Structure formats: C-alpha cells, structure tokens
Image (cartoon, rainbow, N blue to C red):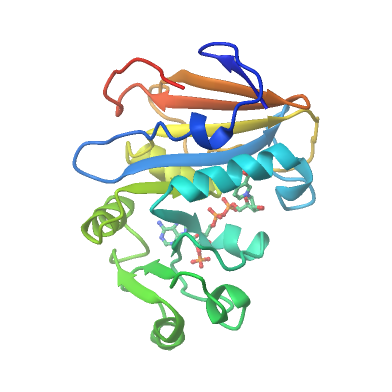
Length: 237
Ligand SMILES: NC(=O)c1ccc[n+]([C@@H]2O[C@H](COP(=O)([O-])OP(=O)(O)OC[C@H]3O[C@@H](n4cnc5c(N)ncnc54)[C@H](OP(=O)(O)O)[C@@H]3O)[C@@H](O)[C@H]2O)c1
C-alpha cells in the first residue's frame, strides 16, 4: 500500500497511518469506515463484500485494532452476518430483535453491547441480556448523543462506526462524526445500493478536510476529518 497524501511513501502499514486518531470534546471521538463504488453504491447484491479487496480488509482490521468499541446498526449486522470480534461491538437497534443464536453472541471474543430504547420488546430484552450488556439509551429507539455519552462513561474513548447508511446519517445530523475513512473501490455498481450517508438533506454541507490518502491495486483509501468537530492540527503519518 502506498501513501499519496500528505506525502508520498511506498510500503506503508495502514495501522501506522490510521494510528492518528481523531479527538472530540465532551464525548468519545467517532471515526466512520465505509467502502463505496466509484458511482457511490455501498453494496453489490445487498452486501459490501463484493466491493472489497485484500487491502480493504487490512484497513478494516487496522481500524478495528485501534478502536475501543465498534458502533454498528442492526441492519448491517444482519446483512453482513457479523461474526465474533476481538473489539467490543455495540449494536444500535430499536427492535432488539437479533439472532441471539449466532456465533456473534454465542462465541464472543468480547461481550457484545446492545444499545436500544425503552420501546424495545421486553421479550427480546430477556434474550439480549443473556448474551450482551444492554443499555437503554432513548425513549423511542436510540438517542445517538445519549448512546455516545454512555459509551464514553464506560471508558470507550474512541468509537469506530461501521454503518450502515441510516446510522451514519444520524451521526452526521448529531454533529458527531469526527473522521470518515472512505475506501473507493474501482468499480461501477449501479443498482439500488445506498450512498454512504442516508439522511434528509443537510441545511449546509458537513465540511471535511483530507487527512491522508493511500492506494493499492486501484483502490483509494481516503481519510477525511470533520472541519466542525476536529481541533485543527497538522497532518501526520
Ligand atoms: N459499504 C459499506 O461500507 C457498508 C457498511 C455498512 C453497511 N453496508 C450496507 O448497508 C446496508 C444496511 O444499511 P441500512 O442503512 O439499510 O441499515 P443500518 O443503518 O445498518 O440498520 C438500520 C437498523 O438499525 C437500527 N437503528 C438505526 N438507527 C436507530 C436508532 N436511532 N434507534 C434504534 N435503532 C436504530 C434499526 O434496527 P432494528 O430494525 O433492529 O430496530 C434499523 O432498522 C446493508 O446492505 C449493508 O450491507 C455497507
């Protein structure tokens, strides 16, 4: 993998480049990792896997290794068949209707966290509490700022969000996206795959600034910082 920006370098380790974590004031910092085709699709046949590469898997693993907790919405856990992870994973769900028999819950490397609201069905919460830490962080579904505050109280200072687009939209709407790691897959996918952010149009664009750019086999691994939430500092590798 080669570094294109902020300077040129060959054979860099993504774990070194991405070790430069975002910081945030008063809540855990939030980094989002997504992959997209050149024409903006986040899925091929309903999952992101068809867009990826060996390099993308290395970046995915490096980002997880640097995170205190992964934040992911239930739709993505279902679609992508999440398996056990060494990094704790917090799932955002209103229904609390998840596959409690899946290895993700029955063979965990780190106890999963279920973030849900007071309107989750009590029967589902009984199942959830057997295999996960359940945090009620909203009256109707999950209140995203409350969820982040609760994760922060539990000592998770750096959150890696892994989507999907509906959760991403809520993070941006809550002004709680500090860094976007975007892999551009050199493909045109067309179809009905969502864009990386699904939300009503923002009144003003959420401004980002390029932090680093890597390339391997035509894949671009771009990293952007939020101008609004990130304190200014000089780029580092
Ligand atoms: N290209 C990529 O990098 C990438 C990354 C991630 C996902 N994806 C793809 O994106 C698709 C999934 O994205 P999506 O936008 O359709 O769904 P999603 O955001 O992954 O999940 C939506 C679900 O999350 C829960 N949820 C979201 N916000 C909530 C809130 N505030 N309170 C409570 N629950 C909340 C609800 O779960 P319940 O239904 O349980 O209530 C909701 O149905 C999949 O096809 C996946 O493969 C692609």
